[in-house]
Amino acid sequence: MKSKLITLTLILMTWSLQAQKNPHKNVVIGTSYEPNEPTIAMHPKDPNILLGGSNIFNLYCSEDGGSTWEEKTLRSTLGVWGDPVIIPDTAGNFYFFHLSNPEDGNWIDRIVCQKTSDNGKSWTNGSYTGLNGTKAQDKHWAIVDPRTNYIYVTWTQFDKYGSARLEDKSSIMFSMSKDEAKTWTKAKKINAIDGDCIDDDNTTEGAVPAIGPNGELYVTWAGPEGLVFDRSLDGGNTWLDKDVAIDPMPGGWTYKIPGIYRCNGLPITTCDISGGAHNGTIYVNWTDQRNGTDDTDVWLATSTDKGTTWSKPIRVNNDAPGKHQFLTWMTVDQTNGYLYFVFYDRRDFKDARTNVYMARSMDGGKTFVNFKINDKPFYPNKGIFFGDYNNIVARGATVRPIWTRLDDTQLSIKTALIDVDAIPKNATAPLIDQTDYTDVLPPDPNILYLSFKIPKKAKLTLQLYNDAGKKLKPIFKCKSFEFGKHIEQFDIPSLKLKKGTYKYQLKKGKTVLKERTFEVQ
Image 1: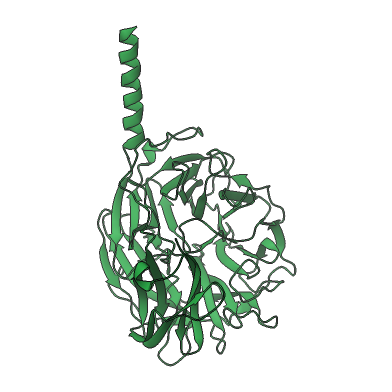
Image 2: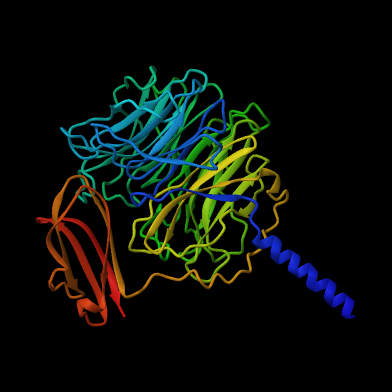
C-alpha cells in the first residue's frame, strides 16, 4: 500500500511539473511608451525576420525569429497615431498602416501607410487614403494578394467620432494600391447598413479583409445587424448589394471584462489559400457574451461557398462554462491550412488574474486544442487603457503570437516562441496550472488611474463630480501635457472623498475628452 501511495505521489508531482513547465519561451519585445495593440508580420522568404508594432508609434525588429528585438519609433509628417498594422508582400517589403495626426490636417483624418524595403531599417514618409474633410478614419486592417502584390485596406469612417446625433453615421470603407503603396484608389463605401458614431454596439467596426485563392476579397464587420459579410469578385470594383448575415452576435460587440479598461469582440476574417483540403474556406473569429456577462467565449464561423452561407458558431475555448476568454485573433498557416488563435483566458482563476492561451485546429475548424503560452498570469488595471487587439502570425514551424501584458501600471509587449511539437495532439482540456501565484496582486484600490492620449500639447483639467452631479474641487486644473500617451495616478484618500460613486471628466476647455466613474470604499 505504501508503495502504491509513493507511486501515486510521484505521478501527481510529474503532472504538476508538466503543468507548470512552459515549452513556449516567452520574450519581452518592448516596454517603451506605454505600448498596447500589437501587430506582427513575418518575411515571406525568411521566417527569422519579424517586424512588430504597437501604439502609438512603436516599431520592433527581429532577425532571429523573435528571440531578440530592437525597439524603435516610427515617424512621419503625416503623424503616427496608433492602430498599428504591419503586413508583408511577396517581394519582401513590409507595410506599416496607422492612424494620422498630420501637421497640416485634422486628427485621424486619413489612413497612412509607410513602406520599408530593408526589414525596418528605413521607411518612406508614407502615402495615405481615405481623406474626406474632417471625417474620422479609424480601425483599419490590410491584406496583400500574393498573386499580384496588390494591397487592400478596409476601415471605419465616422462622420463625427463619438457623436450621438442620428444624422452622423459610420461606414465601412475600402481602398487598394497596385504600386506598392505609392498611390491609392478613391475610398469606396462597401456596407449596406450604416452604423452610428458612438463607437459602441451599433457602430460599424472590425473590417479585416481576407484574400481568397483566386483573388476574391472577403470582409466581415460588426454593427447594428450583428456580424455581416461582404465580398468582391472583381478586385474591389463591385460588392454585394446586400450584406450577408453571419450571426446576430448576442449582447453586441462591446462588453465588460472585470479589470479591463474596455473590451470588444470585433471579428477577424481570414481565408485558407494553402491549396490543401480546406482551400477556399473562409473563417470568421470573434468573442461575445451570448452565454452571460460572466462567460465570454471565443467563436468561429466558416463558409465553404465564398460566404453565401455560414456554419453555426463553433466554440473555440474548451473549458467549462462561466469564465472569460476575450480579445481573440486568428491566422491560417498557409503552408498546411492549420488555424491558430490567441486570446486572454481566465479559466485557471476565480478572480481577474489573466493568462494567455492559444488554440489550434488541424481540421478546418471542427476541433480545437487549447494550450497556455504565458509564463505567469497578470492582474490588469481597469484604469489603464489596455488596447483593443492582439495578433499572431504562423508559417510552418514558426508560430509567433504577440500580446499586451499589464503588471500594475507597467504595459509591455510579449511574444512566445511556440514549440509546435509540444502542442497537444488531441482536443482534451489542458492541464490546469496549480501554482498559487500569490505574488500576482490586484491593483491598489486606493489609487485612481487616468490613462489618455492627446494629439497635440494642451492644458487639461480633471474635474470631479459626486453621484448627484455636483461639481467638486478639480484634481488638477489647466495642467500642461505634451502630445502622446499619459498614465497619471492619484491617491484617493488624499482627495478626502466620502464613500460612494464619483465621476471624473478630463477636459480641454469645455470639451470633455474622457469621462469615467469610480468607487470610493
